[in-house]
Image 1 (tube, rainbow, N blue to C red):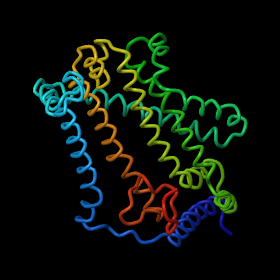
Image 2 (tube, rainbow, N blue to C red):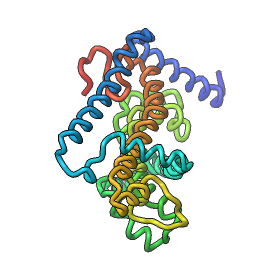
Image 3 (cartoon, one colour):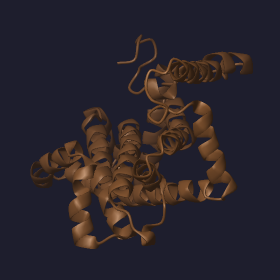
Length: 313
């Protein structure tokens, strides 16, 4: 008869094989789409939409729907970007904000993940903390900036505090929602083969909650980025340097509408780039491993979609 350690290791392998087998039975084979099809479905539509927006923008400028200083032409914004680039400031400004945003998000991930596990698994803590997390998630991040400045001063610590207060509730709530949606059969199967405690969290709870957890991470990044922009717009100091939020506020102070439009565009570009480069591939890996990604589907519209279930819910 096998000893307890051997039985536990075999149980983990059996559970992994069982889960993989169930996913394989429910999945359809995902084939890589031809390059032409990818360009037609995923590249041309956003490029066409961008060109259409620029055209409408330029037509409004030509039609003089408002004063020139209120609505600069797209080429004026391009000239503003080129000027920053030639002064060697454009990349520095972008990196100041991106480095802060990513560092704050990783801190939120390190705090929000164990917090979400604790709230989801301990009934007393759940009753006490879950309403607080939900309330904090609905609170605009900009509300934390004034008290953070008073408590911590005008420094990077204040920036990270605002990011954490905005992002940690989203990360924790995403994981809690994922754990709540785990089919009880998974947990009973784990218990039946002797997986408990930390092993259960590692091999059953976290893998089963992964889709909602990744969705929570995406939301957490969005809150991190918004919180950082709010903090950079409100709090300015030579010690903080110039980030994208400060660039936006400088445009307002100087009545430089081209600079304001440039800052808004850069904030959008960074947010979209992080989503496309980090979270969208992560989504695809999770969905593909679960047999939930079908050919030609957008990774951001297929959460919780089952093969053959029709439109994503």
